[in-house]
Image (tube, rainbow, N blue to C red; front, side, top):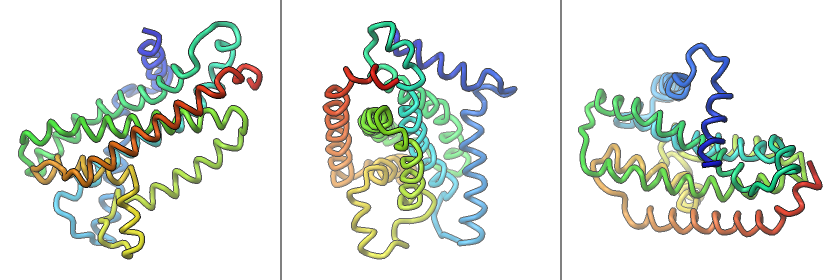
Amino acid sequence: FLLWSLIIKDLKVRYKRSSLGLVWVMLNPLLTMTVLAVVFSQVFQYNIKHFTVYLLSGTLLWNLYAQGTTASMASLQGNGPILRKLYVPPSVFVASAIGSALVNFVFTLAPLLLLALADGILPTWSWLFLIVPALLATLFSLGLGLIVASLVVFFTDTYEIYQVIVMAYYFLTPIFYPVNILPQPLRALELYNPMYLFIVSFRTALIQDTLPSPDQVLPALAISLGILLLGWFIFTRVEDTFVYHF
């Protein structure tokens, strides 16, 4: 109940001063996709079939990760007064940040699927698999969110450093360009890039009318669970000292 209440509160606070409200959840990635589609389809002329769907699907999964983990860093500091006065599991605030990003992602699925239909992609049973890479990206984001939320309590500069890391990570992940344009060493590294694995699995199920191969899904599952366990281990080791640093 507390987790759901925090997610609803976050969404209300985020959009309460906006005239369009929750419409921005769907409008923002669509506008981003439009700009990137014009630039990378006209200027760089990438020959990718269903490029707008390719681009939007990658953008939505990336936003789930980036928005969730970035909000996680502010979640503990922003709720410091509550943690000092009441016994509340600190992890619930990180989980609510990831949960809000997941709710935003669910809202944006509707325009993505409508765009896919308008682009001539017919719905198939493989679309049911879309939930798997989305959940794996959520677990990965939760684990990473627990790590960065712990770090920022003790090292405030973590927030600024992480913003730079996320930006670099964005350009190193094939979201708006095909993976085959990368030189071979970087292309090989993408097999260990969790966000690439989530995105390529999602795109395979959505665009290619087939299920992704185990070579994509199993490493993604292993990385997601590994980061989640690592994040939980780090977070629970230091959570009792959080109140002394707010």
